[in-house]
Length: 465
Image (cartoon, rainbow, N blue to C red; front, side, top):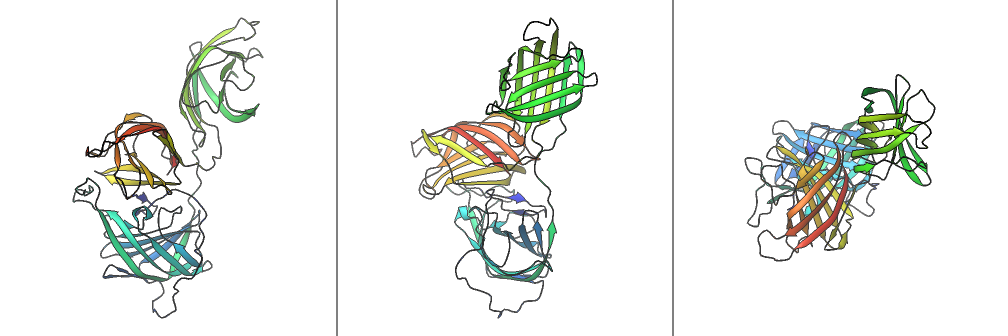
């Protein structure tokens, strides 16, 4: 099922969001240029929407800190808006076809209620923008544009209108002869990424609360192994330290009593002696481990003893828990999507992430495409999902459903739906805009006309949104 992709911009309008970052350059070649024969006032924004005229002096732009320019023209009386989005703007001609590896797009919103027409290339439409003047000194921009927008038809309740095959009905709109002159734009700092959190650490030592006065984390490389070191100190000077290999992941693990610096181990120093007592035995249950944002969340317990047997002291560390961020300045998240289809590797070259509203609920739409073969896989689940494992369904009912789709060749074959399937969310941080998970499903023809079945296994994804 093809479902349109939306995103909320800071200007509170819905436009397309395709999340593959790359450098955007002006198109090369000869293109029609504005020869000056069209008379337009400064600050004016005009276009033809189908056979109707769109003309307004209510237009402005925003250039954010990532060098993404958004230009909006709005007719106040009707609520109509045209929105143009371009990466790395400058004088030149740009592709407005969304979903082709940039954030560029054109959108037409018919009313203030939303459901825009978008120049989404995954639905076979396109667009073009020609910036004829980009005045950085006076922060004004001029140019021409045209695009074809597409959207999913919605009924009066806001639900997709389906055709006889159960597929969403698509509507298109032609935006032609677009032109704007000296539209003012402002610059906007959108801040940095990352997931800054306040580190939390608690445990009991022989039944007495260990309230950490300070918590420090570091990532060390020992013999080629990356190890996260968490050190908590209380007001008495007692120390609890936990070393966690960075490749450990989510799960429950037994701690070691001796380590060469690369092992999972718990240590306790009671401050009255200079030697560490180590975990023997000990366990840790890691419920969150994000190597991109650096956030780890876990519970633990261990019996702390002298690993050499020379000190008879024993300490029981119980009810341990922590939530820490060991990366102070996270780097860029690597968006990825992969699976095996009947044993053959599915590695897409295009990954699109978006949000739609169904029955009043916001939902993620993740679409992965292999351009050469036309294979497409879609993963759909609500944005309020929590970490855990879920059974997939076959279709949308109330908006809370999770399901997958597989199309062997776009435009040539039918789409097969998950029945059954399992989705596991390993990590989800809405503030950081990050979700990670795994999936597996059996893809079938729900109409029972095609007996072919596809087994999708070892599915995994890491998505930034």
